[in-house]
Amino acid sequence: MGANGFDIDESKDVSEKLKETTFEEPGSETTETKKADDTKKTDGDDDEEKKPPPVGNGGTVDGKYVWSQTLSEVIITMPLPSKLRAKDVVVDMGKNKLKVALKTDLKNPIVDDALTNTIILDDSLWTIEDGDKLVLQLTKLSQMEWWDAVCQNDPKIDTKTI
Image (cartoon, rainbow, N blue to C red; front, side, top):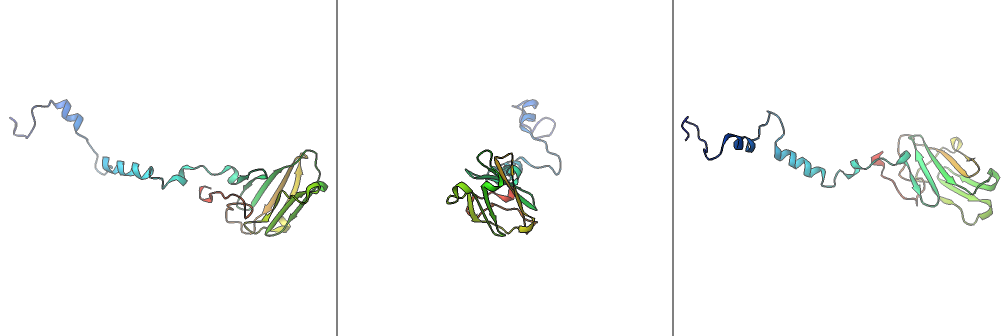
């Protein structure tokens, strides 16, 4: 007990004791709570939140095409050999399938697969831009969902990040 009636350790001066003491406002988080929150963030459970959404909300199918989407449509852009015209390309769109091939190589289509979701065929179209890009605009039947891929056998994207 000190001379003024308080229980103090007189071997430490006041400045050292202040360094050891933490002051917290009522209702504020404690250091232990902050540490627990920090470990939760690094557990790997929130990795999806850290990933940015895919560019254009779509993806890339290596060697074939790049695609993007909105809630109502999917846009597919395929590189083509230069100076092609519409009569040089075969595009067969169905409400659940897609086939794209060059007339010079019908046995090896660029794409020949089932779509992951249904499209509105009458509202979907394709065009050749600049003679070297095939652009397909597919109108989604269900216009309130994100597609995780265009075709069944394509790599999937994480739609939770969109």
